[in-house]
Amino acid sequence: MSNRPNFGEEPHPARNKNASLNREVPPLERCYVRSVPTDARPTPRIRDGVRAALPLVLGPLLFGLSFGVLAEAAGMSTAAAVVMSATTFAGSAQFAAASVLDDGGTVVAAVVSAVLLNARYVGQSIAAASIFPGSRPRRFVESQLIVDESWALSGRSGRFEWPILVGAGLLLYVLWVSSTAIGSVVGSALGDPSDLGLDAAFAALFLALAKPYLREHKAVAAALVAAAITLVLIPIAPAGVPLVVASAACLLGLRR
Image (cartoon, rainbow, N blue to C red; front, side, top):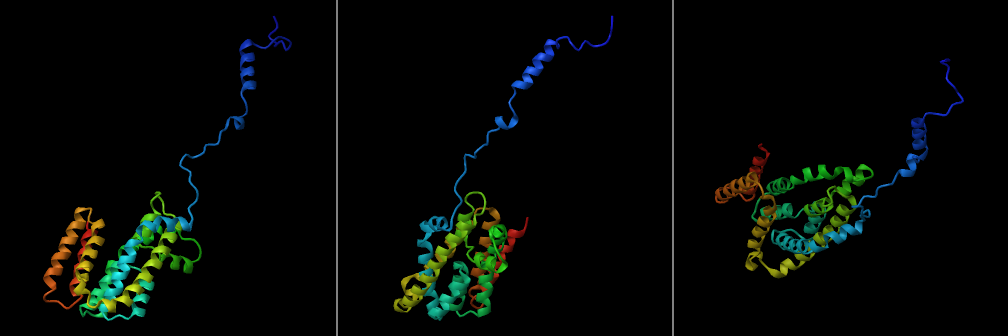
């Protein structure tokens, strides 16, 4: 019998079946279905940031008015108070500086107090730096809109969003500067802030600003040490020095 293959005979049934299966499988591109993320949402716009900050407008309005009153009582002119709010845009730092000046402290003590209180913005700015587009001058200007509220609102989705941060920051900036001007103008009509109990209100404001940060044992320990330092130094140290020295207690948070 010849061992040569018979090219005229029918293919093996198993081979027929495999060939049939291969012909019946549609091309891969016909089976592909594009998945659509279920959490897709429209790209935010600057006006969305403005809307997000609307529930917070009472805070900067009241604090701006209070700062204007305190600034006027500390001997700052309306123009100086407004310029400070427009260039600093940091409530706690401005209150600290105005309080030091009001108590007769030096400009150096007021500036150091403000710088120490604003040190937290270094970390916030680094975290959100990548979302700012454009040239360095543009990024520098827009980054001045980073405050606690705009920074927190812009990161609610799990990543920082430039339109939310800029929109919220713009609204808060306008409110802060304008309310400072109003508070400074009406401050002279109100007289001494201590007569209205505003001196206690300023202390309560600082406590309210500190509360969100007192969530860990290290933060509580730093606050208690700062309070103790302040109470000890107030009777013996020049105005502003207790605040500057007490601010150094924040360094406790750097220890692991």
